[in-house]
Amino acid sequence: MTRHLLEIDDLAPADLIEILDRAEEPAPPPALAGEGMALLFEKPSARTRNSMEMAVVQLGGHPVTIRPDEVGLDQRESTEDVARTLGCYHAMIGARVFEHSKIERLAANAGVPVVNMLSDDGHPLQALADLLTIRQVFGELEGRTVAYIGDANNVARSLGLGCGLAGLEFRVASPAGYRFDAGDIDRLRAVGVEPQVSDHPMDAARGADVIYADVWTSMGQEDERPSRLDAFAGYTVDDEMMGATAPGGVFLHCLPAHPGEEVTRGVLDGSTSRIWQQAENRMHAARGALWWLLDQP
Image 1 (tube, rainbow, N blue to C red):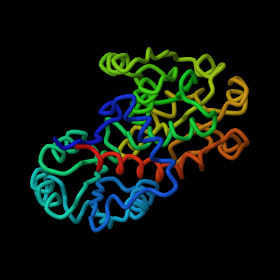
Image 2 (spheres, rainbow, N blue to C red):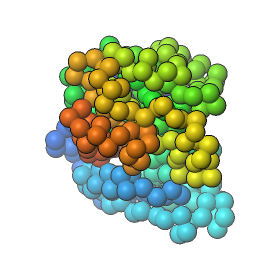
Image 3 (cartoon, one colour):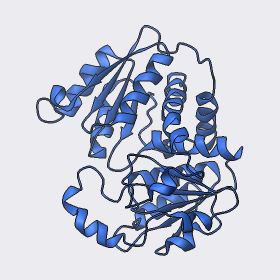
């Protein structure tokens, strides 16, 4: 049975730790030697394209980046037929899409491992990079506390699931209308985390080891920007909020950021920020995940 990485809770806790260990291997084997990996984009991304292409190269493979106009999922060709076509040529497929169902349909028809490079429901490769960064900063994961401040979106969902698998405490502060729903809470509990949900950012930040933020208005939500700016007033991560963290507390952000909205420029560029280490770890975490998938029976 072909293994895929469609969301972080596709992994067992031991799988997640093995991927992080492999991510830090300085000389990975050429697991993709002579093979290609199709990288299919409905949404553009600087970090995802660069990190994934380099991860494939570091495993000895050849990345083939495919723009949305070159395929047109369910427009020029059905998602199922695109999956079958790419599976003829490539050892793996990565896809960055809007609807999560397209990732599931690709996986059901490709015949090779499929990796979710982002969907509206989840961002597992980002969560792996986040956890790798936290482990590098603190030396361990278990027992640390992550406070996510902002929209309970795909990034927050994957991060929370990853925290549960790795034994971290997870807090989230979001305004009404932008919180996890009951299904999300049940899913988080299923991996061992009881999310502490609040609408007071300072309460979530107090004593946390990591403060995490994402943009308030994601790609495809531009029409909602005015209402979102109103809803998230008071949720900006600033020096005062970082000062409420545990000693040694750090700031993370999946990028790109909107300075002055979800975080101040001072925090982004300040001494507690680990955003560039985190961005680099997108490549290392992807490499570890791809190598691990290729080794699955």
